Length: 161
Image 1 (cartoon, rainbow, N blue to C red):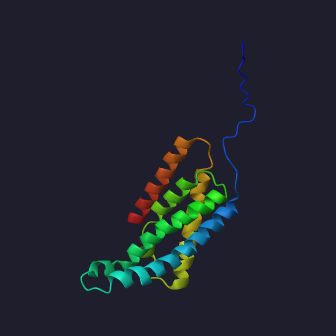
Image 2: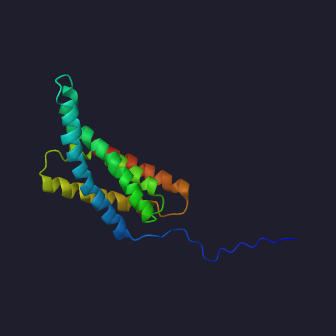
Image 3: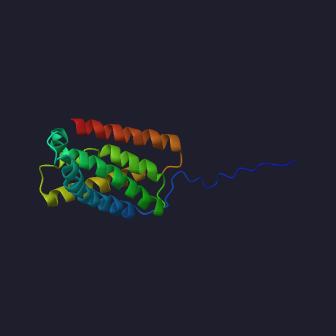
């Protein structure tokens, strides 16, 4: 008869497969890339394609918001690829929650100077990537998803205030 032996001498409730500075640098780099992509999409796609015609005035008035939302999706995808290569735990959750939390960042920073926009975007992306990656380090999936959803909901509530 086969006897099953369960050895729980060394439980590992937390996964530590990456360093925090790599996640922070990834977030800062993604934040700077976000500003560049927002500018390029606004200048060459939104204004270039839609603002030339007079019947699309609504798109032109909200060009920064639309281009920022497109850039959020693009940098989220790029950040996901970088985090997969860094072997971050649950990188899809980190990328999605960061994108949801920072949705509309271009509208928030639209009145600032270029240096301030880059600094704010880099800091916010860096902090959000580190915070969400810290939440995702636990081995249990359901509590991680619940806490990540709570972080996203709280971030959207704070932004709405």
